[in-house]
Amino acid sequence: MEIIRSKKFTASLPWGSIKIANMNGITTKLHWTNEPYRWHVNEGQEVFAVLDGMVEMQYMKNGIVHTSLLNQGDVFYADEGTEHVASPVGEARILVIESEGSI
Image (tube, rainbow, N blue to C red; front, side, top):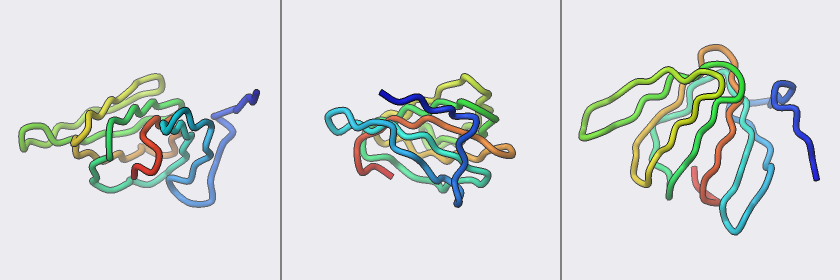
């Protein structure tokens, strides 16, 4: 058993994380960042929950870029093959659930 106080978590580098669990090849990680990630496609599905802060999420759908502002408590689901990029507005803490080894 473990309790993680997400609002207190920081990392030395943007998108630094701690692994919370690996359940049959599905990882759950807590990330801290203050910089954008990069456009990418995950190997499998991804659930992205904003625990603290705000994140501008851009994703490609039918060749068109869409943008949504995610606030604390919002969840973004990326199906396999969804190209996307997350850009925090200031600092953000994000819970990410995805296949082990996914980028």
